[in-house]
Image (tube, rainbow, N blue to C red):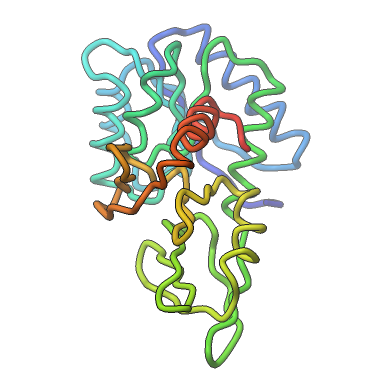
Length: 237
């Protein structure tokens, strides 16, 4: 990160939580030698009045009066699709709704510095993590956090990202070995899915944020649900 200024907003109606998160951020930044500009908001209305286009990361309390964190995130997404959103909540069940608005992570209260640091480490890592992929003509780098899922199709491996479909000359097994460490799960022989792209699970299918439906094997369903719940709780596999 070096000398790049990172702009962070924290929105929570509890002044103690605001102060604690601000302290955690400054401790983290000092340790990592990062430059931060932290702005505090006690309600969503104030945050929406601010220039959200230029914010890099937002910590949102889910349970706020007037406008809750989930609704607030929807409105933020209309203005800024890139900002990293982290929900701060007392309740794990809210985590499921967060993926509709591409929330990055959940912090469950009460939060401590160690958990906070671990979550931020994972985020910076994911922002900078790439998969080297061999295509027919060249080797390219694909940013892991843009990958929705990987599938095998007629003997080829296809990587589906937010914007494109990349055919690569590798095996599903090799790609799975790398991506398993990055919050992906092999939900079917033919599919490897990014847990953060999952919107909901229905019967033997997984629905992704972009509307794609992929198959979930019966014999992997139980393990998938366990892994997904852990993921929502802020734990990586």
